[in-house]
Image (tube, rainbow, N blue to C red; front, side, top):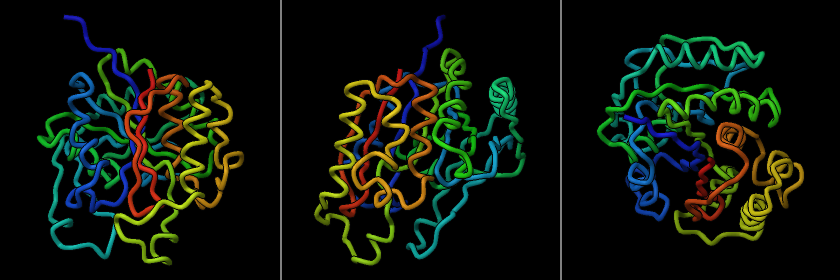
Amino acid sequence: MTRAVQPALFVSHGSPMILFEPSPARDFLAGLGSQVARPDAILMLSAHHDMAGPVATASPAPPTIHDFGGFPQKLFDVRYPAPGDPALAAEVAALVGGAGIAVALDGQRGLDHGAWVPLLLAWPDADIPVVQLSISSAHPPEWHYRVGQALTPLRERNVLIIGSGSLTHNLRAIFAERRDHDAAVPEWVSEFADWVQARFDVGDRDAVLHAVERGPHGRRNHPTPDHILPLFAAMGAGGAQAERLHHSYTYGVLAMDAYRFG
C-alpha cells in the first residue's frame, strides 16, 4: 500500500479559548483532519516551544502543558494524551543534523498549547503520535526555512509537518484596548495579512521570509518574531507555493490564516 505524501501546514492557533469560543477559525481547525490524509505521525513546530537551538520532544507519553494563566478552570482541565514517538524524534534530529544544525532531544517535555489546542480540534481522539520541534527566536527566518527543508523527507513517510503560530500577533493591542472576541479589524492588521497573501500569490518567497521587515506594519503585527517563525519552517518543508486554506480574524488583531505547502 502506497503511503500518502503529506503537505506541510501552517495554522494560526489563536487564544486557547478557541476550544470554547465559536469562530470561523475554530470551525476550520475542527475540520482540518478531514482535509488531509490521516498521518502516521505529526511533527509540530509551535511558537510556544522557543529554544536557543532546535530541541525535539522524545517522550513516549508527552504530558499536556498548560502554559498560560488567567483562563477558566475548564481550560486547565483539558488533556491531550497523544502518544509521543521517540524514534521519529531521533529521525528529526538526524535529518536536521544532516543540514549542519545540531538537534537536542528532550525526553521529558510535553505538548504546549500551540500544539495541543489545534490538534485537539483537528484530531480529538489523540491517537496519532506527536513530536514537537522547537523554533528559535535567536535565529533568522532563513534558518527556520533551512530547518523546514531538512524535514521534507518526512512528508513521504506520511508524517504531517505543522507550523503553529499566528499570521499576526500583537497581544498588547488586545489587552491595552480591551478588545472583545469580535472586535473590528484595524487596517494595520488587514494590510499585513493581505500583503503576505499577495506575496504568496506571485511566489515571492524572499519577501515572505522578510515580512516583518518589509510588510506593512510588520513590526506592529509582530513585536516579537515567535509566532511567524513556524510559517517559515512550514514553507521550507513544503515549498514556497502556498494555498491559503483559511482567513479570518479574532479579537480584531489576530489574523487566523492557515496555509498548505506542497
